[in-house]
Each structure stands twice: as C-alpha cells, then as structure tokens.
Length: 160
Ligand SMILES: [Zn+2]
Image 1: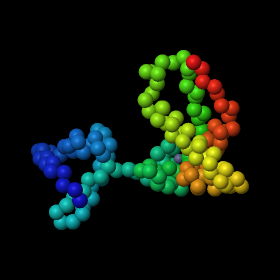
Image 2: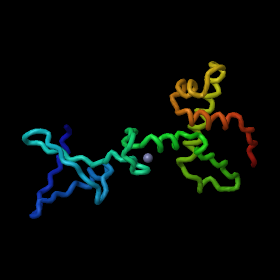
Image 3: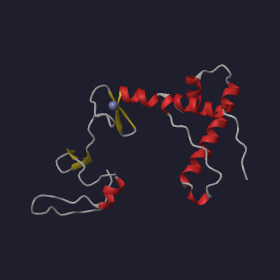
Image 4: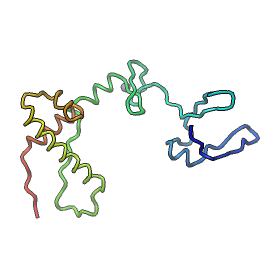
C-alpha cells in the first residue's frame, strides 16, 4: 500500500474530501459512487465503484471483464463484427497539416507498421487463416481483416 501523505479532516457531517490529485489520477468524477472496504482494524480502503453491468447496454447477463470495463456477450459480438469497423478516412491533401489531429499521424504510422507486419506474416505463413494471423501478430481478428482490406486496396499516389 502506498502512502500518499495526504491528510483530510472529517467535517461536522462526517464527510471527507477526496484530494483532487487522487480524483484526477484515479479518474473519479463528482457524483461517482465510492465503495468502502475494511482492510483490517486500522485501515479503510476507498475504491471507485464499478457495477458489473454491461458498460454499453446495462445488461447483467453473461458479462465479462475487459480493460476495466464490463461488457456483455451480445455487445461483445457486435463489437467484434468486422463489418462495424469504421473505414479510416483518407487524409485530404488540401487540408493544411496544422489542422490535422496530432494523434492521427501516430495512429496512421502504427497502422502502416502493422500492415507491413501483416504482409510479412502472410509471406511467412501463406496458409494461415485470419485467426492464426491475429494470433501471430497479437491483434484481433477484426483488426486483421481491416488491415487486409488496406493491403488489398490500390495504393493511392500522393498529390503535390
Ligand atoms: Zn451489452
């Protein structure tokens, strides 16, 4: 357990303020439910409460935990459907670079890198199916099919 060194006094109604540093780093917003745990005689632990309902549809059936979120089977299936993956829009050559989202070029670079890795994986394992390729590259099958579409798309020549 890490000592934050932060001390807050209980007010006359028994309330304490969770220090803003903790709220910011732990992603706790005003109005969020907080759970109390008793660790031992002296220690009470506070934790942001996350219910086990699906983040997307609030269903409580067949819910699994993924990256700090709960998701139900049917939402999981919908998300995994490669048809639902948005096509990345081609950047317009007319737009000045300054207006481009700084994160998008990094993302594009990653996609290019992954596309090249996929190309290599296909060369090395010409008979691998989508699932096996996904395992080789450590990405989802949906991502493989998205990248494959990129690979098969005719290369666009740069304008200007
Ligand atoms: Zn759901």
